[in-house]
Amino acid sequence: MSKTPAIGAALAVAILFAGCTATGGEPKPAASEPAGTNRPAFSAPAATEGEPTAAEETTEAEPTEAEATEEEQDAKPFGSSWTWEDGLSITVSKPKDYKPNVYAAGTEGFTKFVVFDVTLVNKSTKTWDPSMFSASMQSGNEEASEVYDYGKLKERPNTKLLKGREVTFQIAFGVKDPKDLVLEVTPDWERKPALYHS
Image 1 (cartoon, rainbow, N blue to C red):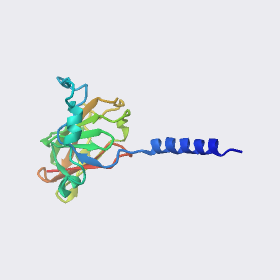
Image 2 (image 1 turned 90 degrees about the vertical axis):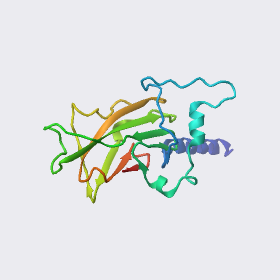
Image 3 (image 1 turned 30 degrees about the horizontal axis):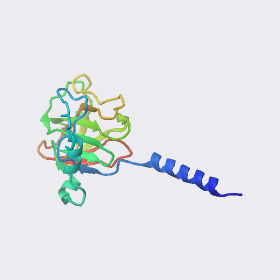
Image 4 (image 1 turned 90 degrees about the horizontal axis):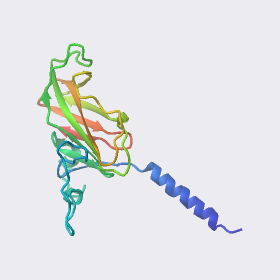
């Protein structure tokens, strides 16, 4: 009996399994802020023959892990962007002072609060599910407390993000020292976290 069909079937299963377990891996610093096709007032310039597209220029400009400094690999300043290997990108704005509503949750024990705009751009090859997004923060030598202020903050997304599109929302924290912040953001369980610092 020929072993060729059995080998072929085993190879197909191995390829399928590899595709299912592929992850976004570690994030890399992005040279510029990525943008989705649905960003207001955004339109990618049409590429002329022989010229690279905006996406190609961004890819070429991004430093590799070998080129990035140790500090860039560990954390980036607020306002910067990270891009994972599969093309999902995140940008977290610089912190702004925030005053939560009286009914907001997560404010207990804090008198100082900050808010961030978070933008995720999906340039990966598949739809991104935002339900696993998480964020945590250290301020001074203490863990900060995430503030849930429905009706005032731009809510976290629930709708899956199609390829090429972006979504923007807000996260807020009660902090010990607004000038000393380290934020860790994780898009989902497939990707390693990205770090920001003040």
